[in-house]
Each structure stands twice: as C-alpha cells, then as structure tokens.
Amino acid sequence: MAGFRSLARQVRDPLGDLALRRYSLRKCLERFAPYGHRATWDHLCARHGIDPEDRAPDPARLLGALEELEEARAIWLAYEAGFAERRRREKHEGLRRPGAFDDWHRRTWGGHGVARCADPEVHPSEPLAEVLRRLIAALGSGPGSACPVCADTGIEWRQERERGHEPWSGPVCTACGIAVPQPVLTDRTLARARLVRHRRLAAAAAA
Image (tube, rainbow, N blue to C red; front, side, top):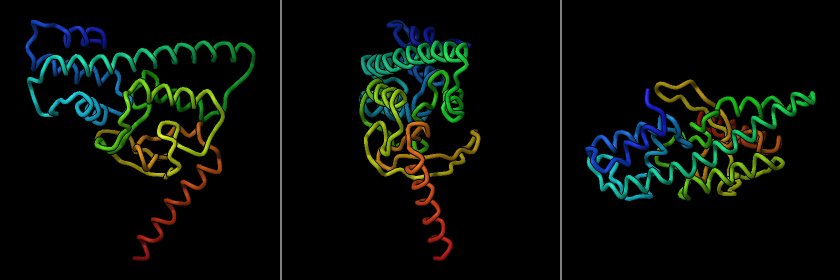
C-alpha cells in the first residue's frame, strides 16, 4: 500500500495521467484527512476551484490542493512528535494526563479525523494548516467554552452513525461543523451541550 509521500509524488508527476493524479490525491486523504475523507475533499475542492466530479482537473489546482494538505500534515506530525516525547517524559516521571486527553490522541493519531466533520459540506473555510494551528494551541492551553477553531459558543452534543464507521457521539460546533475535542472544553460547556441535545430530543418526542 502506497504511503502519503509516494502518493504525493504521483500527484506531482507532470507526465502522469490527470485522472490518476486526481485519484492519487484522493488516496492521500486515506492517510491524512483532518475533517475526514469526504469533508476534507470537499474543502480542498472548494478552496482550489476543483469540480469534485471532474476526472481530469487543472493540474495547477491539484498541486495547490496537495500543497495545502502537505502543509497541514507537516504541522500535525510535528505536534504528534512533540506530544509523544512529552508523554514519554511524563510517564518516566510518573505523571499521567486525564484519560479523555489520552483517549482522544489515540483515536486521532496520524491526523485522520482530528477535526472531524460529519457533514461533508459543513467545515471551516480557513486553510487546513490554520485550523490545525488553532486546534493545537487550544490543546496546549486550559479548557474553554468556545470552539477552538472558530470561537463560536454554539456547542451541541450529537450522535452520528456513518456508513462504514463506528457510531460516534460528542460535542460539535454548530458554526463550523467540527467535532470539538472534549479535553479543550470545560465540564460546564460539555454539560450544556448535552442539555441542548436532551431538550431537542424531548421536544421532538412531544411533537
């Protein structure tokens, strides 16, 4: 199975068939897709003027999308390396992070779905690298009451069941659509998000 770098070389190959180069870019998203495969593809197409169904898009647009993806991946891999080193040091010193923090990192190792968007058409509009910088900054600071990406306070608890994926539940930003890592939100914010969901379900049941 080809790795991210090998696939990226195929995307850059000026002699390669455009359909194959596009396919290779899509395959890159199986290795690194911050919003999940479909939402990250929608994001890259929107930002770089690629028709999602075009099998032979402008190669310059393909390269632009690849470069955005590579910049974000470099940022995330550097963060993962720093996190792994911190954990080794903390374990050696007998220190442990809260379970939710470690669990979240295990689920997102490699960067796939690190800012998961269940709706592929609802995601942040900023460059992927900027979104990851904001997320990483939030992970390195104390819990807050707003989305670490767009600063909106509309946080809602949702349960999703996507085809081919495990059922998932957690806080979601109603503005930019990302699944917000629970460790970056205060207990009060998480409780409020659950209450919003409970009230909506109660209203639907009474209707």
